[in-house]
Length: 400
Image 1 (tube, rainbow, N blue to C red):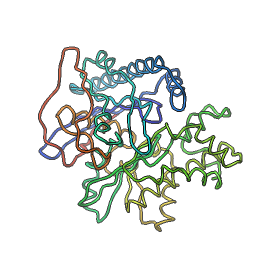
Image 2: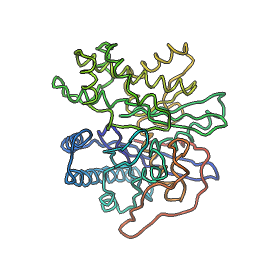
Image 3: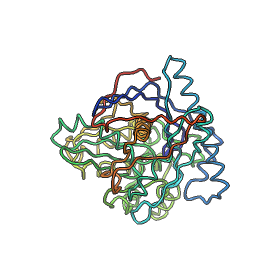
Image 4: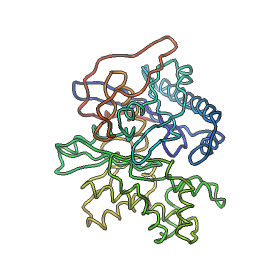
């Protein structure tokens, strides 16, 4: 289970993993998404950077988000059982990131809220949580962690490709995992995907929307070149990977400050078009600098055809159509639930004593078993032995 940097709800995937030597077979038996209650989402948004919050605010959110995750888990388990699904051994909960502490390119701390004890109590199952801290303590960025799944899914493409292929996640923040023949993968956060667009849409009094559905707002506007230049001057884009970022940097006040420095005014459609173009150009730059010829996208941004086309157009302009942009559906992986599946995989690794990070992607000093384990009320700990996977097979299922 995970709520990402768009903080709009909780994505859930129930996965059955079967280890076959070096191959890990995965059947996705259920996927779903549960939106946060409006009151909880409002509290969460009000507590995000650059807002000042109290320990009371943090404690309250930790409890309420934990209870929301418990409700989402219980609903998923009920739906799974109603379709005749088998027993579930454990839960991995990423929780909700509220702060990712980065100073001069080094990640120093990270905080995900959603107290796992509420999930344990509601479901009776053990819960793996706090999965980023071990990588960070080992000198890594604590992100991106989804590259564990990315490298396994992309392995067949890499073996058949003369050059690198990449997985692109377009959530609140965009990140890229680059897999290369004969070399370790690497990954990094590119910059904002939906974060800034969501922020300006939600703050505009002329609309009740909280995001640019289907890219309609951006399609109705025009890119403002001067403002785009100010936004593209952000130093983060020129840092070398591994690197990570979040809404500590890219938030509503960041956009307002950029507008002040630009010195003009922009309508909401023009502002959304400009921010979408910022994402398109920074993503294209990251892809081009990696020498990638094929990109498979996932995350909420894939439901914005205008954004996807802008990314493809930016790549076409630079390469004359040499880079193909598709989605992870091309390799049998649902773009909407990839991150939930990735954290199910991380939980499976933790319960089998296997590393869940990829040091070449996060910058950690070595592989680490991730997370902490909250036992079930009965003390049940689903431990076992397994071989580290070298590839993954998405077994046809019927997720609903």
